Image (cartoon, rainbow, N blue to C red; front, side, top):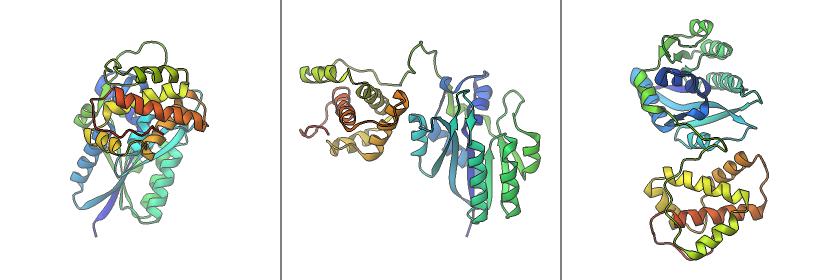
Length: 298
């Protein structure tokens, strides 16, 4: 049986160091866009190529979330195959809390259970030393991966010395995955959306007007446009085939998005219904015509 490897990614380190390496600037998270699917795939390909006799168990992704509520981007990462999302919290000062603890915990559990024989940690935090030592004591080989930003890896020397290997992430993996987001105007965070043609249905226009006073429906419209901007044609076809029901995973993502944007953790059933109506309204009026059922959306 081949040995098994897991990859542990500190998203905070990735964004901060990656921006310096690829974009040559210290940027905030909101100024950097990551192609998570492409990055996870290329990272796994690189590491599995270096260890062809080993099987990748999964990639663990560690990040912070305001009030513990995942963003739409974090939900997208969590939905990737063979990726496990672990969320800490972001405090009022914008600092991640609990992320290192989660990473140490996973290193200890996976090594204790003999689930992996190799761990690859993309991070620079010295607080991970305890987890690395514990895994090594149980026969796991541990490599740390750094990101070179102008000659600075921003890694604790103690962490590097503790690991079995110290690797540097290939620059092309970062270059293919990170991009700078253009300047934002003041006001609420922008949500990516595809250009919206004018509404042609009088009834649809009237319905949108009646829903526009509901803030949760407005958040649902933003979510739907963002989802449409990224959804492949096959996903849209499958969604339409099941109308009027919204798949549970998409419905959950939409609700979490509304919670994140509004700061209100509990959304009543009436508001949820308004959100689902808005979802189908936007999808119906802002995509090319498609066959659909005539049932009232629920």
